[in-house]
Image 1 (cartoon, one colour):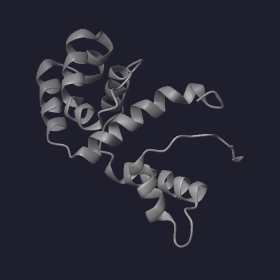
Image 2 (image 1 turned 180 degrees about the vertical axis):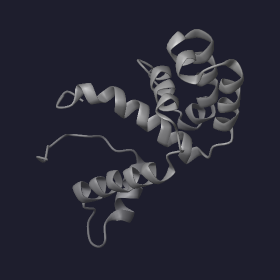
Image 3 (image 1 turned 60 degrees about the vertical axis):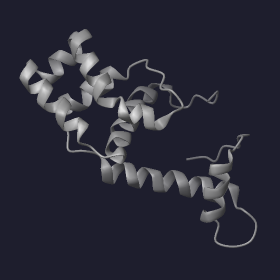
Image 4 (image 1 turned 90 degrees about the vertical axis):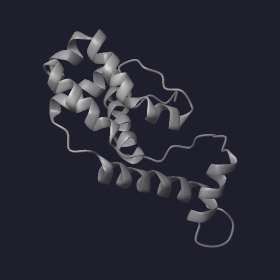
Length: 139
């Protein structure tokens, strides 16, 4: 994969993480951001709940076109609600989750997930929908 030079603005929390990921000397911005992305992907892979393809597709349908808020804790708390609303309002989600009893059991299971498990599912859905935008340099 080719390296791409981008201009970004970093918040204090990100700067702190970049500093922690730099082994010595001045902050290695590129190296620490790339390390952060690599570590994030490892954590996502390790925390992805065991889901059937139909369950993954239900989440993907729920997040199709959805623009999450910048409040990550709120998004994580609302994950089971989004799924429940999707089941009520979206025929595709109903088809993927099956009958009401199975859907309720699955939604209850989602409520028991850790924050990192919820984040992994949210990442999977976003990655699924962004795959069609591969190579888009405007982001």
